Length: 196
Image (cartoon, rainbow, N blue to C red; front, side, top):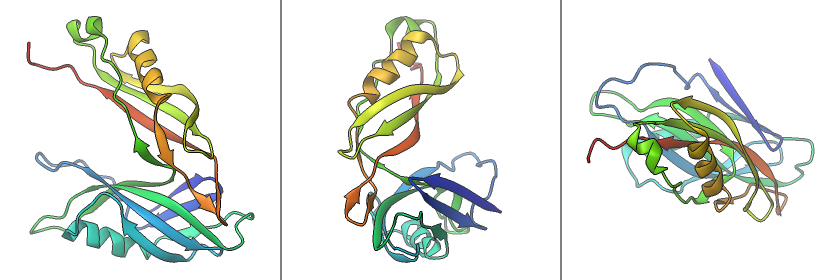
């Protein structure tokens, strides 16, 4: 199965490694981020883990990245630096890591948490606000809007997510030495605490 994500003129295709499945109890997905260097033709030059230690899952995913296809846009003439985020179930003693999804583009640098409105907590409202975030060449959020919501999300929760997003910063893709603008979807989760 091929999954393709077009980000700033690049298509990252994870060939035959994006497998839909239901995670078993205890299998907690984790995000692995890699700084990726590509030549003008889209060939992978390097993939360096950003936030993962040197564990079996990180090494497996790094090897998988070398098999993926990156298709350059017409404006790349020498090199591209981007970030690839892989959401995966870590490897275990009896199974390799399982890739759930992957995307390329600006990577989160500083993310502040939204305020969880007190009335929403009291009423047990919880869910996810999916934001569409536009990132400028300086890495700052230039615009944000609510793309979708899941669960019992009210207007105050959505506004809180938007307010937090306005202070976020990202590491940008760089094409031929020039930082690029980008857009991405970012989930903001609100989970009601069971503690009083």
